[in-house]
Image 1 (cartoon, helix red, strand yellow):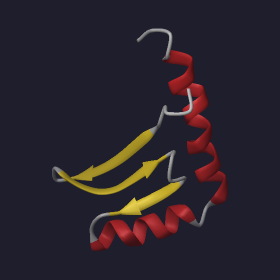
Image 2: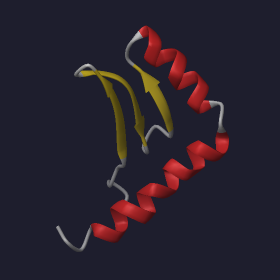
Image 3: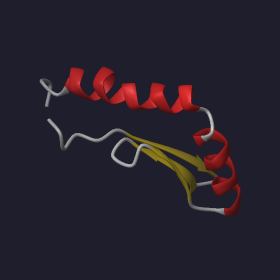
Image 4: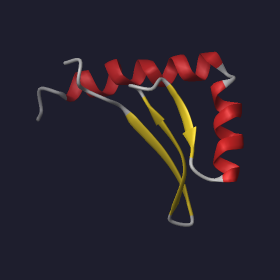
Amino acid sequence: LKDIQYVYSIYYNKLEIARFDSNVGKFVGYTEFGVKQANYWNSDTSYIAGLNAQRETYCLHNIDIW
């Protein structure tokens, strides 16, 4: 179960601007705007902790379905 990963991507106009990956543990920006937003989101530790908890809440809960 350690290889399960939660990925949350943010798109604008069909372009991925930022992505949260539970293996990395933070947002990574892919555009100039995305980098600014990623830095802002990464500074909120409670938001990052909530997204990390989504791995256990969403992914591990649904693993039996697949």
